Image (cartoon, rainbow, N blue to C red):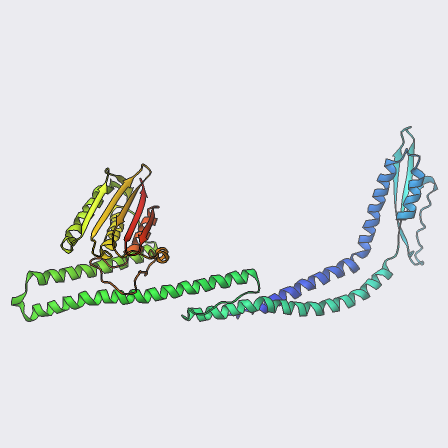
Length: 429
């Protein structure tokens, strides 16, 4: 593959080429086209003189106007009968140094008299002028080329240097060093690009830290049930007569926990990739929430949790029931996992004709204000100490965010540290 040229040399070639085009244009107009342009100018002056005479043909100042044309524009206006055309040179003679442009024009006065004038414009020789201009252009061209080369090199270097520095820093970033700093203060666009890249590096650093933390947490969540399953399976193998119902239930519970964790990881992957589709239907949202609360309530009742569901009427919506149930389930499990001594959790359903709002209120640890914008991000969790969930995987909030966004709904949280949190989402009816 052909190696690309450096940006600096491309800019240099562009600026030098631009200067060359300007010089070539200057030579074209000042040398090649000078005589033709001069003749066209004189012809235009004759046309203007004709218009002026026609406008003043009955004016008593006509003679003065004709004299002014001769003095100011070197255009001679004379009656046709007194005009003597220039003699054509013989073949053996040199052509005259000075040339002339003539044009005959008839005018009609107010009294009906027809007057014919000849307009005669002298074209002075431009060869001497052309020669002088040519000599000047030699010096100007040499000077301009020298200055252009120097200026093009300096500009190319100034423009390309910050981009090259950003490129080198980007290579460091691509190698996984997220602490690299992008500096570009020369131009506004370069400065904005460097700020964007610095922000990108910071966000990538956060994502990398959260990814490592997530992998550690998932490894912990996987290792614990696997160790329990293996331990009890080994005991059942060695002491088959001592197997109890509690042993088998523990193995089944830990297997469900593993399945839940793997399922949430797959859901996050599909939602991030945009491959998950909605299967909408018109269904009773209130009944669906009530059934979910009943199932989870029976599961956590032995741990002292009380789930209170408040609603004023049955609400029907057009949505994907499975996905909405999953989002609600994740928020409810999140409230259970972060509750403390007060294990009363309140679920409120309110509808106002335009949308329905679901709130899940707990009295747990709460979330600090500066962390609220990030809790919906993938891999994020509020505490550094990993807490094994009673149920669920810990990936629930990012799944909730994607599901509600797919339904064009809204979501949010109000939280006070040490007092609890109110997670909510709303859907259009």
